[in-house]
Image 1: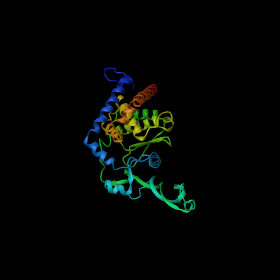
Image 2: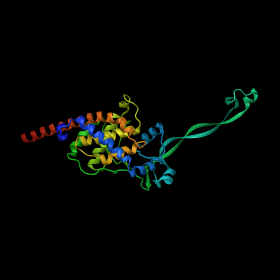
Image 3: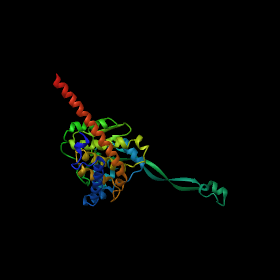
Image 4: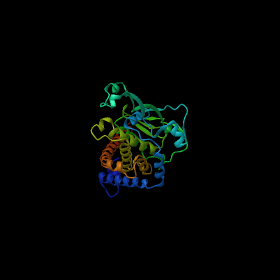
Length: 315
């Protein structure tokens, strides 16, 4: 599959096409922000706690596919769901206040009575941490949570096997199929340097998920981000999904707008595409690189198939 084959009829350059797609991406996500479904989704998200960077790392290390976590009681009272029996919780650190008695002169160095200050005890409050357990939504059952967009893409992909093989060939880490529980479609494990894709999905969802996770593995690994700014998870998810949309549509593989626009909006912090705007230039550059890599991989496959066919005819 060459670049020429996938260009629009007016012969626009690949970079021009990518710019048009990133503009479409920004407009599409902005439109989601105005929908009633997004407002309901925000109300639901407001009930989830924001977690510190350390806790996010703890969650990801114990459950890489985690999407929404809450405590046992919170799932029941706030969301009408209950933790399934036998679910293995995720350990994080919660701040707590504890009281401690200290010598009076620690806080009152200018006490008039030195001897009294030396023996006087004073109770002070200090900030500490305790281990608590939270559970991902995949570990719960009950009332459905508000959502936006479609839960999963459906349909077949033309030349699926060739497209899949090309994506695997450009991935910087091995790709595996797994039975992933819950709503996660796949994940990239930076520590183990591997990508997992959920088994049993449609061809369209499998390709979109693989594009998303390859984006993480290529541009958001620990080694790559050492050379860039430290991106939080919102930026990473927005970039990876933006790349999946642009690359899939530019190559006429899939149009994931119905899935990708709401997905990106779900990771935004407010009613503006702030995270996405800050990532657009990186998305444009990365999309150009990924499209070129996929095209070359497909061309190599075509040459191998031609050579194999010629050998079969000669026999």
